[in-house]
Length: 303
Image (cartoon, rainbow, N blue to C red; front, side, top):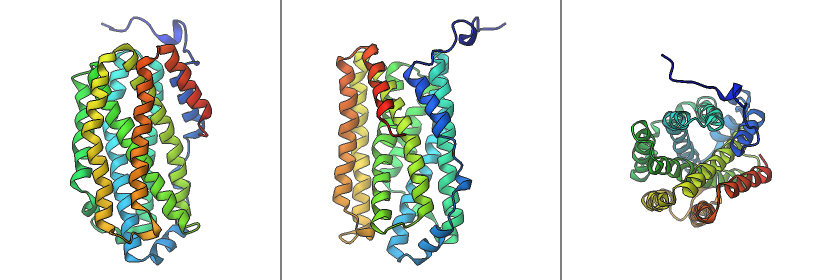
C-alpha cells in the first residue's frame, strides 16, 4: 500500500521563487564542470621544482582537503533523507547537486595527486593530527549520522553547524585563503590547482548560503535551538583553532611561500565571527526576512 498520497509536481507545481530553488538553478548553471578537463601538466612540473618544505606544505593542504571532501561526501546522505521526509522538495533537489559537487571536489583533489604528484605523496596520514581527527573522524560523522535516528530541530541544527558552518564556512574558507595566497605569492604557480580551487570555492559558496538559510529557518521557528548553535560552535572552534596551531608548530617561524600563519589564524576567526553574526540576525527575524536576506546573498554572490 502506498504511503504517498500527492505529488508537488502535479498539485500546484514547484515554486521556483524560493531561495533554495534559486540555489539549485545556480548549481545547474555553474556547478557543471569536470575535473578531468583541467590540465595538470604545468602543475606536475611546478611541484617537481619545489623545495622539500614547499612540497610538504602543498601535500598537507591536499591531505586535509581531500579527506575532508571524502568525509562530507560520505556524511551528507542523512541530511538529504531528513529534508525528504519533511517534504521539502526544493531543498532535496538542491541537496542532490550539493552531493554531486562534493563528490566532484573529491575527484579533483585525487586527480591532482595522481597526475601532478604521484608517488611523491607518500603516506599522507602523517598530516592528520588530533585536532583534525576530532572534527572529521568524530564530530562530523557523529552529528550527521545522528540524523538517521533523531531528526529533531536540535539534531538538524547541530549537523548543519558542524557541516556547513565549521567545516565549510570556517575551515574550508580558511584553507582556500591560504592556498590562493601561497600560489599567487609565487606568480602563476600550479595553474590547474588554482583553476580547480576557484571552481570549488564557487560551489562551496552555494553550500554555505544553504546552510545559513537552513539554520536561520530553524532559529526562527524554534528559538530554543540557539543554545545548540552556541554549544556546537563552542565545542568545535577550539579544534579549528588547533589546526592553525598545528601548522605553526610544523613550519615554525619560516613557513613556505612567505605565508603569514598569524594572519591565517585571524582570517579563521573572522570567518567564525562572520558566520555567527549572520545566524544571530535570525533570532530577531521572521521567515519572510530570512527568505529576503537569502535572495540578497544569492544576488550578491559572484558565483
